[in-house]
Length: 159
Image (cartoon, rainbow, N blue to C red; front, side, top):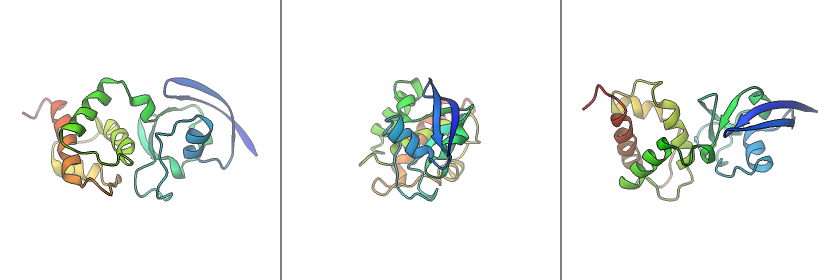
């Protein structure tokens, strides 16, 4: 059984049919060719498949494509080239927060969602907010340092 949806994906309109049980991950990768969305755990644990739906992070491996009807979806491909992407990518490079890069798209999208919506005044708050994004090779100190640099730059109360 299929359903008709209308959504904005990375700034472009999508109007069409999706299967009622089609996962957002499969829709984005297989139908729209957005391969920056990665599949890993398939149970909402690792954060690798994170995309933004109406600005909130969701695990696309367990989110139905039909549920984005009337919504705005952003993947890493939509983030590339924005000032935030440039800033956070440069911070990740400066802090050596990337090795294989498999988890990085989900991390960057989660970080974008956190900007201005979460109390990021402390390292503990950032750790908690990013807890759903796992990295197997970099270790978290460098990732946390990169995130804190960017978040600190956007928080006028911190110096």
